[in-house]
Length: 182
Picture 1: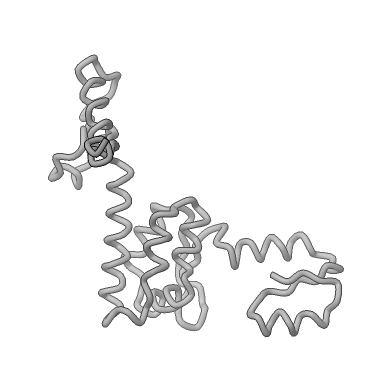
Picture 2: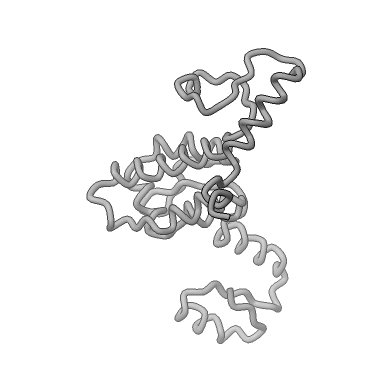
């Protein structure tokens, strides 16, 4: 963003593909706010088609991942060419996902289906990584894994349950290779 009281600098901003905001604008604070929402990834994620027309919107990460599964190819192409997904995820603190997605270039994939699958794989891998070493509430999709301690009921854990939770967290989050080398 280029912010100046000299309106002739608007042309210079366009040349370097930057936003221009006039410091003398009566709506200066709103202009800055709109810039932050549009260009820096804050606010809801607005899925747009190839012409830039909004198609759907996601308020949070869960909605984003669910809607990502059903977006048309034109929406995937539009956003992946602009790195919109990684920008929005980075603004939400989803740094690992954002770093992985920013390396995926649209032209590196033969089809949009391959790109979508690669992105969904990143989402799933990071989601499972966050659950490592934690006690999670029962979820049918996780029953096939033996990596999680799953809570079936409500209430507090007993001593054995807390011990299992501690060991699970320890095993999942300690880098044993680093310990063995010493």
